[in-house]
Length: 43
Image 1: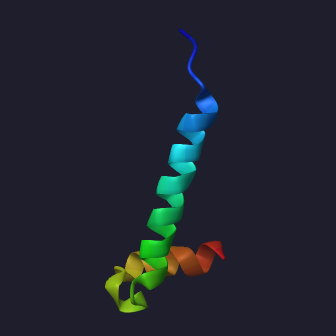
Image 2: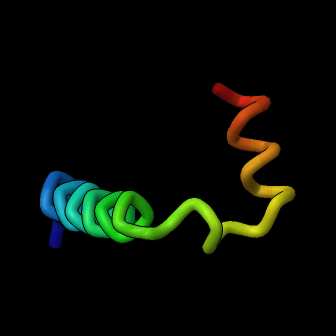
């Protein structure tokens, strides 16, 4: 039986969006300082 990988990808995209929304709702102070530095260096 073949998997419909599109549904699996959609589920992962949905999980990613929910995680991004949670992160966006967090205060920047909630992040450990090394993660903030890594984000600054990446962007």
